[in-house]
Length: 205
Image (cartoon, rainbow, N blue to C red; front, side, top):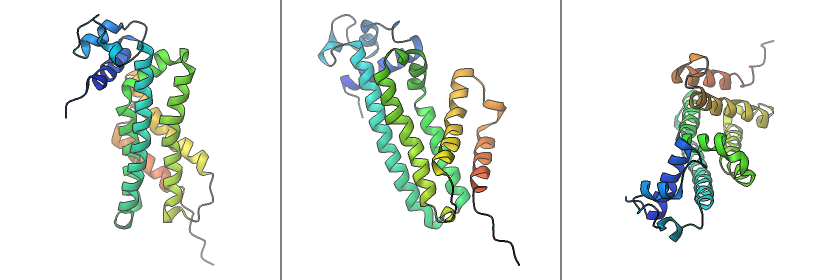
């Protein structure tokens, strides 16, 4: 499916912001990358300013994330009856890693440029990050295996979700895998830790 001009502007602007930085990217460069005549004002037919393009990109990523989270929870719920716990946990972990990787351009913009736009930091926090952590808590609480586990699911969601986010962010910012742990090692360890949350069987008397 071909992208609309507005979509091309948003996508190419975010790519350029990630590569060069927000301040170092001109409107003309965005126009050229989007297939418009550079400097002819084509961007302004869709947006009032370069800032509005950035805000639109972040808001659209937040909207997409909320939709993806809802779809992932529905997909996981549908597979629960026929899939064992470790496979379900693996799916949750891999989905989180894929989502963080999908947002790699936005991540670079976030760390480089968004401190000057606190209102956009709030959108990332409430629209992208918090829904992911909330989804982990919701998922664990819905699993029958964890039904009797009286645990601080908010704290656990922060630890398990945070490790997924950190794994990809470390790779993006440092250029290496944390602890040199390959993806499959990370997923296996993540699943083992999550299974370890299960209540221990009562001792036989």
